[in-house]
Image 1 (cartoon, rainbow, N blue to C red):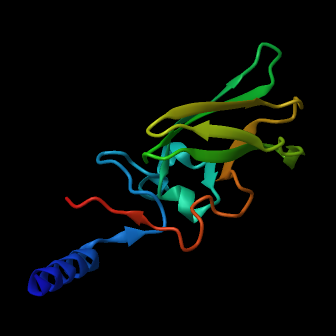
Image 2 (image 1 turned 180 degrees about the horizontal axis):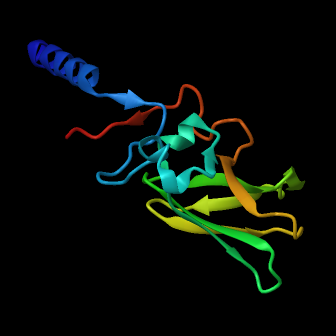
Length: 157
């Protein structure tokens, strides 16, 4: 009986040593995270400001247009590559021919359900605005929602 308990304890210890953990939730297969997308030509006006978020979210698209009154507008679709809720804050920066044309928009909270997506949009208020850029940050204002010391089990492949 004692041998059996010792063998079971050794087996658990060996298996625990093989388990891999990471500081962000694992992503599902085939989902392109921002880490994999960064630098893509069609996404150059998007900035993900949190390295942790870059590992679990992706940007599907960013599109710019003009409103009926001729003001610049932007829409950005983001998605969650993990099986946990993710909270983002997003804002838009506005520029014109002579630099910043108006203050950045206020940070807006965007919730991403597990494997979900959401669309964020904003419009300029100045006719001088002709370019926009979108910033994406951690919804906990600089404190990672994937807390230090918190680990996630990486599924065995």
